[in-house]
Length: 446
Ligand code: 2IT
Image (cartoon, rainbow, N blue to C red):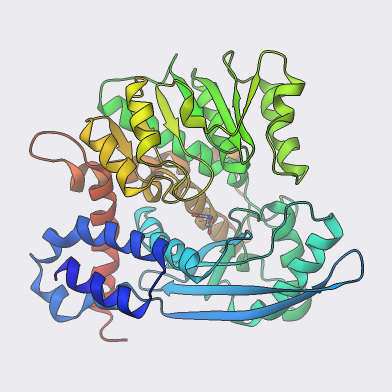
């Protein structure tokens, strides 16, 4: 396998799909060496088959807004790879959603899910529907219209969607309600991230952020460092940012920044319960601005137009969107003394940013390892649904701990370089790839 040849072919077939091509290139560069040691992979054309989704559903979603006007959006579900389990992955509602974005996310999801130790394939879905400023009734009508199209292509053993950017517990509720009506079955396992009274799992809302911090703890311990007393800059202020901020604070770190599309909140005193609760209220307000945080808390300052990476910190945690931390941001962080960066968002860092962090020899770990606790806990939700039981929060949390520890160990196993530096990007990509490739090989040409 030659990365350049495969990439040239993909660029020709999928011109302009920049996020998708970026995600594929990163994985191929990581695995090239190992792959070429396995002629059986080459013979079965594993890479050529793995880079293309199994199938893509594209559909029109028409709904009526509060003014009585008819709105039309595009909906997608990308079933990427089912070698190790049913398709599994979130649904993103964001105005910039397009096939390239969802293909990158579905591709990443395949390897991430393989890392979780659980049997889940990779998928992603979403819509260019923009939830910002929409009323609750509009959100409900949109979710219902979206599910009306999707319901027949998903199922507890087929494809199990969940939340992502713009899709939280409320949206999953509206989608599940419509699914149940159309399917005429109480198939709780068809979606994850459900409410606690109807099949949801304790700890799922916290899992992505908590799991990320468990991973960071392992990474720091391996490097002989501790999170206690460290300053942490977090981008975003949604569910994932909230989970990360909550656990970081609990572990004794000081969260000195959160951010939104409007700018960054500098929060030198760190978080407390009231501030963490307010983050959730701010997100639920659906306005997508973080500035009100600094109006409410006198010790915090809002800096318009700036990113979280302009704030001096020990640990940087991108928790918002892909490519939100670029090469210049990474250089600024390194110059300000940052010694650890972990992607909590999917592909939160550009390739230039990753090269800058790794070049500076600081700790860096990729989203598909760091944020895998979210989908892993979705997997635990599926297990509970299949068994018709609910585990306690302590039980789910202990399983999440074990999973994050396993993912960290897999990264170390495959990513430790001769000079001792742990290349977590390479480690995560190789570990995820080997599992999926082996399964594809054993299942023949399908
Ligand atoms: O990116 C992700 O891993 C998610 N949005 C969660 C997917 C899931 O199925 O829980």
